[in-house]
Image (cartoon, rainbow, N blue to C red; front, side, top):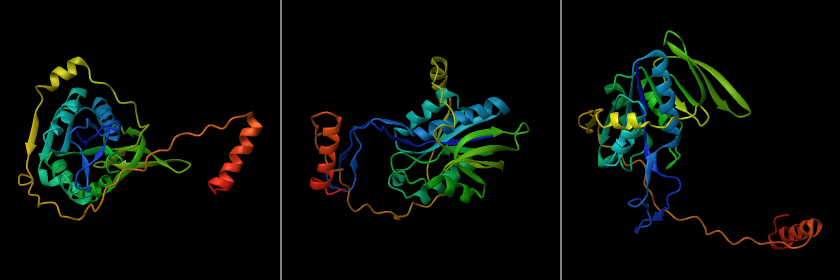
Length: 258
């Protein structure tokens, strides 16, 4: 079975983000880059499927020079190979253009099932998995929190998170599965895996190699601003009853909230 995982490299969530000089973006030159956290759950589930049914796991991604670091991380975990689209025009591409590129990478990898994170933590669009499935004309299951492949590898029973509970879906392969937190517990790379990753192949392709048109200008960022600075905490003195009374007064008279 050929299993493909779509990975995205994103700024670490604890990075200090600064607004760029033109006020229409953020300065990313000094941030730390990591694999999108939701994609880590996708990667782990792909490796477990490989361990159960056999086959190969390949990762695909789009990005610049640093994206190969994310690919090496995946290879160290146990992926067998990687394909990277390096093209600067995709740096600010909209979700549809990204989905078209990923669909081309998935076809190049001859995937039978695709895992990806439910969303990327940098833009939080949560649009790519559904678009990717539509472009491939495959069924999809999003926000997956449980996955059990059939013994014959023809499909899987997937639990997805819904409001107030879980929904169980039976899906036939090929399919796109978008992972939610809680699907599994991602593994760490072993020293042996890290050393082996240095010898595993990373295929670098261009948009021309995939017969892709340049991404459109569907999204234009007009302004980027930092959130308002947090004000200092205000301590209320006294015993519990005095504190409650003073808090109610503040909310009513000063803040006009009650």
